[in-house]
Length: 427
View 1 (cartoon, rainbow, N blue to C red):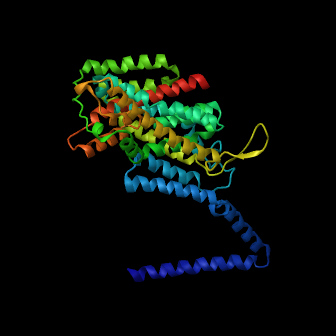
View 2: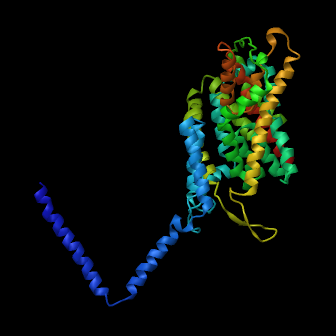
View 3: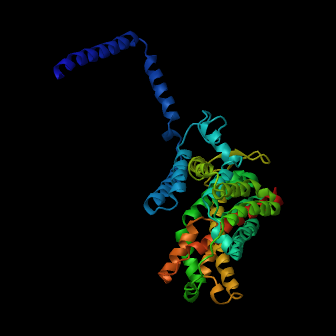
């Protein structure tokens, strides 16, 4: 068989080189052919990423690789960090502008996908999925714990004032402050309305701190809650009827959106998704919302948000006519990350401190374990799991997960209401 193949292959090679020699012989008299060849190579080089690379591109690529490393090595929010990390790589591959490649170039595929971020389409769809997978039983069973979800939002409003003091506009400050809620979709929704030019930095900061909940929160919890109070055991939550579960999303939708109509796209979809789950007659729709739909939207949201973090993006200032850097690596981005960290710490501390204050007015077995106050941020269910782990470290028989879910889910509602209030005042 090998001998049969050798002869045809040899004939093909001879014909190929013969044709090449013939072309070379017919053009050898034209010395310009070499110039044209070099021009073609030069043109090809100018289109490559190597020719257009800047050191900032490699810095951002390093950030993207770090996100992927955290997701794979430490299992920190892999469903978010891997799409965002890959998006950062995509957004920072250097290219020659004008060929409809980049995220910010009209007509490019990435630009079409990014439209869902810019117009605030993706966050409500994610809230629909969250609603379809959330069990509000613990909150219905012990409604006073909703106060802890509200208390944790102090980080949002505190950071708003802090951002205003260091030079951000009121609209920008509102978008930055929402990072304290540890709610990525809400941060994207609000920044798309108030500060689109800061969306990349705000979204990456919000998702980064969501992923780092198991790292950031435990030291704050140990610092602010004495061990004696960490040992408090709470009585099991009461059983919640099916009727209560059905009525909760309906009443919650009407009550929260009447208070904050600007949050209707988020809260409307959240409670709609929960009604699909609890009604018992739309399981197929609920299953689609909490699985296929939320997975697709998470992929698109993560990749496009990551790709929006171009290291350098020069844009003309409409007031001065000068070209200014609106890319990710700018002084504003650094400030946003610092403010975001402060916001998240303050939000966690607010929930813990308020839980301890509540205990001053509660007696006997009605006292609450202050650790669950840390779950008031809306990083569902990671912050509730952190509370559970911290409780078990102090007492292996003290299970706090179900109790922590009450302020955790109320934190989701609270951050959306806070975003609606910001929109109402700052739009």
